[in-house]
Length: 320
Image (cartoon, rainbow, N blue to C red; front, top):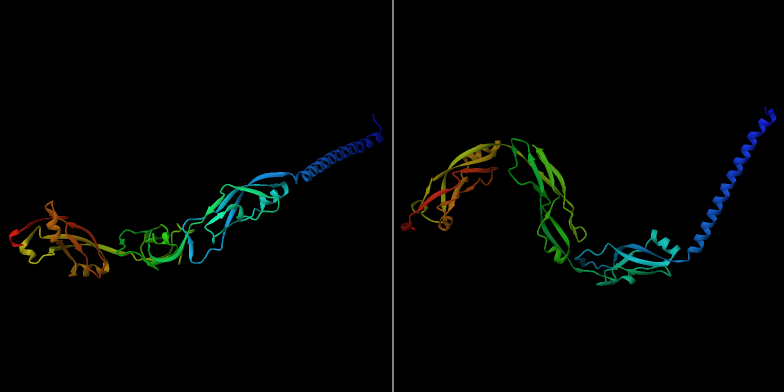
């Protein structure tokens, strides 16, 4: 049986062995780090090669010209130099300068490299396409889809404020633009005045600028009802039409929608009428023509249908 003194000595021996093993690994790690550091110091001056993507920046563009084609946003290059310099360039690459006072940019002249660095560009030169800068006002076209609740309807197109926009950019681009759309927006279940800001579509942001980037849209739905009026068809474009042309039938029924507040006025309006052009009859080859409905000018109404939708006719040639 071991003596008490021997039992006390054993833990101290284990601690000495653990400490010795720890010191051993510290020495090994120190040697590895030192060796790597020496290797790195010796390698920093060695030549190397990397691929770099350089972002472009435009300078010296005159106020009276604009790009007709989007210039390159970045260029690729194979860069050679010592390892330390390449390491720095990897994290802080220089800018590729597009001097807009020139039509063609020679790539080697567009970058300032540190001493001892050379580069070969994928694109040896870049051509800038510029034209005279012009302005042109065009109408704004709504791409907002509005669906009122059941029993309500829109009798007028939504109003846009402002209803136009000034487009500025290269002449060939601006002259080809005849209108500018809003962003597509859909509103469902509308029953009262809708007033909302709508952004203009940003499709040519890099080539043109707009005088404003949004418009206000207002739309007023109305509760409506359906009405029916029987109207005599009028033949236009010829005098004494009643003695020259006979229509079958001579009257039609026109179905319409109108706001409740204006229904009676639409029913009684004198400028609510139906016509057929004599020119349409003269050019017709089918034996029937389609009547045209004219709604009251100062009232809100929508033509829904006409019965019958076409009319037969007889022309008294001897009376023409």
